Length: 607
Image (cartoon, rainbow, N blue to C red):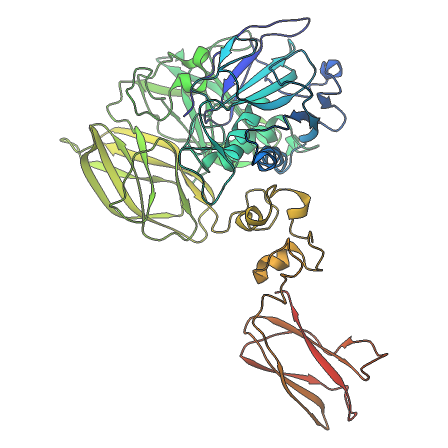
């Protein structure tokens, strides 16, 4: 579980305060200084003062050092690879120019030090106190410490993982119960390292908390990726995208701490942010969204969970930023969506208004995906569904969610998910009522975030982004190969040796070909030929049209006929085109053979 991140002060030369961020779970909420400048790396005015041991300015590369000891003695290399994978994932975001380089191992005892010109990542295993005894890691899985110049240009960052309280694992298939999954926590903390704050919507890497083990943080959401595209864009990319800015008002007064949600016209959630308190650059209620492709969108506003809401809750202001939003106003009603049109290269102004009122509906927790309605549980993280899922159960919980004199309507905002049986269960868990929905997901359902809603009379409540539609075949690093296959055979499953066209075992078959055949890409003796059932040539016959070769085959597999005249001294050559077998016995024709003697072989090709 994760919590808000407090701040501690430190200054030296140009350095402004150093911030401590906890390893909880949030999304595209930027970190602004008092002048309204975003915290990020590579600002041209002051990056020349940043040590070359910290960044390569010309290549926009952030350098980092790992503690070779990692967490455990028996699994250290896998633990370090999990951190490397997390960096690879952030670097793989399309249309961005952000890179990372492992510079080596930390020399000596690792400690938090924002003045040593070194970005370091390590597990603290000897004390709860870090940062010279100023900060206590109890209750946190990880903390990120950041230093920056007056213009909010990053200078240095250190990440420390809590090796005192929890076990850590890299086992994706069978993680121990209650263990922190190293890759998930590293993904989240690296988001802080590049300038992000906790998210205002559900299934994101930067959500302030999630379940233990492999979870929603593993895969960057469109909301997470939008931050990288906004602040670390590839050359020319910014001019192809638009942005949105304005003010949220309650009774004509600027309202900080409100959640602004950007959806496509079908209601699929794309971005979420929070309106800001006043500073030197803007008034209360200011918001902005960046890296938006041109087109039509829907925009709406929702309150966060009240600061005094009892456990459970989804997202409070303090979970995003304790100082800015810890006691923010939540006594207003969600707005109806309005349409906005984004043009490339332009910033659109759109003010938003909400009505006063104390919501009586609040979704407090989520029912994760279950195949059986008897397997109900109560979580505060998003439900994952996959394209093609049929008749699975998801839902949500909260107090007093039943009908009164007004009827209740519940559902899912967004496209590609069909709702079937819907059940209400009063006080399913303590005081929490349950709404459980049987759903089926279209094979071509758009990937990404959806929102639960409950409407009673004129009032409505949401769990924004707490449904995540995932691909039937996972490929979150967008390299064209099944992530599960890569995870099975490579501890650093995002490495060059794990890429689709790589051949790490040197057997002349690419990883993509081995995946199709079901063979082991790291073992040369396991390849698309050796994993097939045995087959044999049955007979060869000759007539005036040439030779006819009949052999056992497997439907769906591809075969190529080769021939030569002599056993020795004559090279094999392909005869005709490769064919795909449709039956258990296949007949191939070699019209070039009019001799009484030829030798043949049949090659099995990757599909």
